[in-house]
Length: 437
Image 1 (cartoon, rainbow, N blue to C red):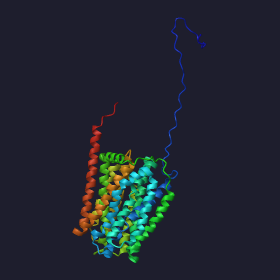
Image 2 (cartoon, rainbow, N blue to C red):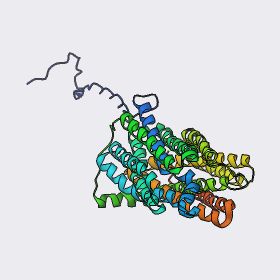
Image 3 (tube, one colour):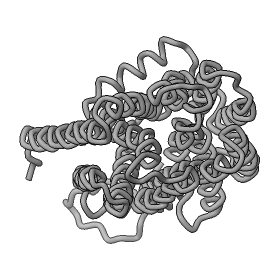
Image 4 (tube, one colour):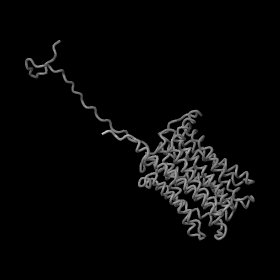
């Protein structure tokens, strides 16, 4: 069958060219819109406020006895180190159970586990005022800490999945800010209530506050849209944990979180005893009001994203460590003003360092984010338990100077780890092959 003529003249003897098929250009596909939440977008404010309230409830419950330790000591005839176990048991329970709770969140969902954890912790919190002995009080606080273990790792994993990466540090900073507000309000409220009606009514008041926060949290938090159900198989969990612990950067971040919290836990566990003694001899209500300096932590945590954008992660950690060191040294004075200024600097440095380190964990872990965050939280609260106990022991052995020495040693560890990380990053940069030109 003759081919159809194109109508073009054909020169004799010329080679006949193959027919050319003209393909229409494929239209470029529009970029897929990122459906995760961002500041100013739908659901972001509700999510931020819900997790802020969860942070308030978590820290208010977790440290509800910390400002009341002198009264607990007097009621049960316990020493400072014995009473400090009402704080250490709660943070230790959280540290032990945060990893198993993170595995449950992979199976049942972040929002479900956070809701259940808050419900159990609130219920135990309403029983704490009726503890008949120091041993019973410590046991109830350990159970409460274990229940709260479902909050921190699940919250950071939820944010890593539901918030755009550029807004992650800011979002986690707001959650940490809720922690600082909870810690501050819990201590201030308990201080004034305890001065009038005793420590039992004070911790009961915190339980009621936590009920309100828990209900509002569940009503406000948006349902997750990017959660992928994981496995509960122990072998899978063990492999994920092993991979995270084999990551040198994650291990450095875990150690930094623990060391920062050692300082913070030690200082705020013992400060009530120091301010209640000579030369200060402050009443319980005023001692509780000292924790208003937590508002500084709210600001420093919520601005950690901008700080890291300007100085980088390691630069921010150096600044946080230096600020904490200056604060520790200021508290050695016997005048109230430098002591208060020192607490302000310690609080600002701690919350900034914690926000940067915890958000870096979520950014570094590409898989198993809940487990990565859980390992950080476990190290963080182990640091809190160690700081609370060691700070009280150091105070008993060497006074406030002993507690400060313990804190300075921990900050030195943060600086050394960060320096090592800077050296490791430079070494890896030199070893990486130059890009082909």
